[in-house]
Amino acid sequence: MGQLVTGEVIRLDESNWKSIEDMEMFKRIERFVDAVWNDVSKWPPFARDTVGKQLVRAADSIGANLVEGDGRYHHKEKLNFFYIARASAKETNFWLCRARTRNMITAERVESMLRELETLRRWINSVISKRREWMSEVKDERAEYSVDDALPPTIDPFTN
Image 1 (cartoon, rainbow, N blue to C red):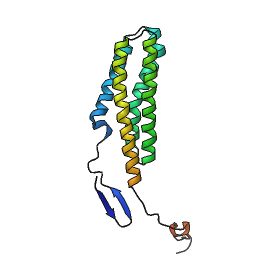
Image 2: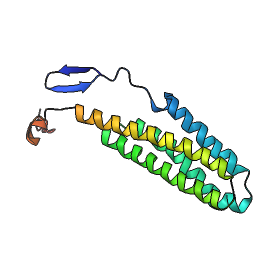
Image 3: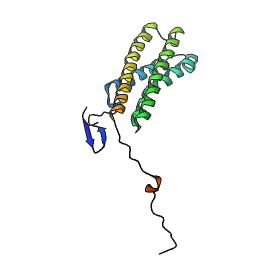
Image 4: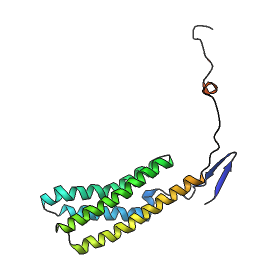
């Protein structure tokens, strides 16, 4: 990735930047969470209201936090939401295993979903790593200033 140098500030050339939502892996996340929704919607009411709702919320949270993080301006904010997305993937894994144990979904189906979830989790890890890399490449020479320098001159509204 190229860098542009402007005075004392080095900034990344993010001309090849893509929105999270435009990435193929994000589209896979959407397909995955829609599959979770479709499976859970067929469960009996008690299973759907207990494990099902938790599973759907956890799965939906993966994509929602990636999108929210991508929309944030500061790198640390972005990272925080990406960490939450990764944790939501782990929570989704937990609820899928609970659903399998409680015979709400077949073991084969869960194993397939867990494999896909692991692929998605690894991609989220790579997004986090890349964001950390960008953070370490951005260097900003701090300017010193006093608060007094930033204040406008005092104006007396009663004198002309």
